[in-house]
Length: 273
Image (cartoon, rainbow, N blue to C red; front, top):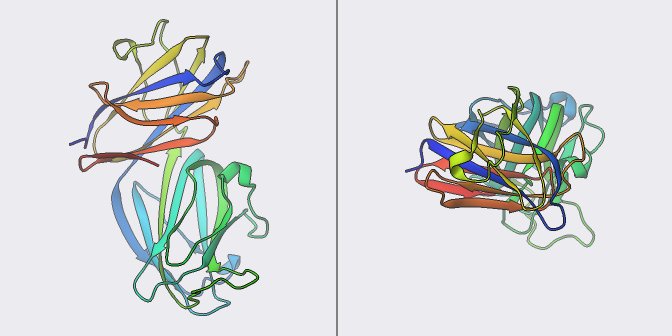
């Protein structure tokens, strides 16, 4: 049962990217569930429903009442960086299909840059969920809208009126301060550098090098780990591995500095997405 414990993060280069400095973001939030319902009217950015934040995952039961109905939600992020994940799943029957989500800036008028969010707009297929990529969003106000998909020719089996469930999670990051990597060599579990959740590690790699970090969780949580290029001669690419206290591999992420790794720790499970 992995409800609490000590975990280790191994950072190494990937491919030809073997030298450079990096930052390692480590943060977590509880896995308690808070359920609420859509509040109408929320058809425009001006009437958008503000999603609550806290040490939990938020599920919102909503629905589209017609072909032109739109449900707008306001997301207010206050930490310097925030791990954000959301999923639009089937709600109470009848559930909608062939719906769409889009993420807008603080004015509610411009789609946020896809390079920041990974995916800023996407359609679902028939009777299936629509999930965002795991990304780290800067502080600010955003708008998430759920609406019916529009395409030419029209998709088949389109259900314009029905229910959905919006699952939403925020992991505040960089709320603490920097932690420098320990003295070299710190390339084994025994020599791992301790880091507190909310802090960010500052390290560097050379060819053949790897850095180990140690984080402790006090209870069930969703843990987010991310590498970013450092200020001086930034590492171009990396591999992240998360291991438990016995060194057993729980999850791994390769490529793409700035992409993130979510680990849910609790109820005997450790899953990455």
